[in-house]
Length: 293
Image (tube, rainbow, N blue to C red):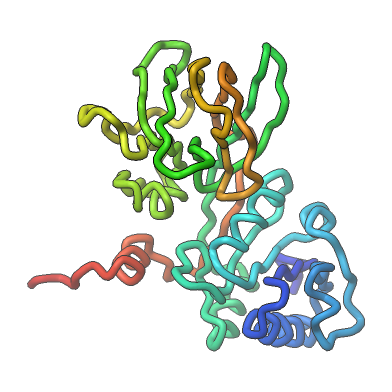
């Protein structure tokens, strides 16, 4: 019988004993079943493996049919930013804390993974955000985020002043400590901590959550996921403002800069076992109560 996935990439969490143990178990499990394996170069030297190709994440994205990410949601986010540009399916083994994006349990992955490898899985296409920093009419940097783009001060409790436009329509003048723009995937992360709404992953929507706004009427707002958000920074702002994508690569913002946030044109192909249920995940991770009757 032809395998649905021929080449499988293994991505780990460097210098993490538990993740390395799970990676080694995964490697042996898959190698004994005849799969061609690509092991991420950052963790390959920490594993007692042989006879598998060592590869970068970009090489895994280009060559693999399936990527298995071992770690927490942060590790999955990093892989997602890399793999969204490639047609590779991604599934996670949880070796972190919450594990909203990593379905498989490290002590019980063989049976559900076998079913996935046999073609029994659910596919989701999660969208990412693209953040573009513009200064004096020129694009300086462009970055991707699977969870959120955050505008914030480099120092605690310093107010930012910014005008926010949606599809070139002025929305509001915001005085706040910052602004979170979240995907549905990221709605259970930093956005949720800031009082933002939970968005189910199938929604085409972006949540905009002001951080400690200086007017009580500045509330979280959900907009169409196809919309483009433009944030223009007042000339009188301090020069220590920052932008970050998934808490990764902080980028300095200068007074008078503009940040444009939109959907990235490519998506992450995330797969789950067939018993995956998003609301069951929420109940477990957020400690929601059981049925009352």
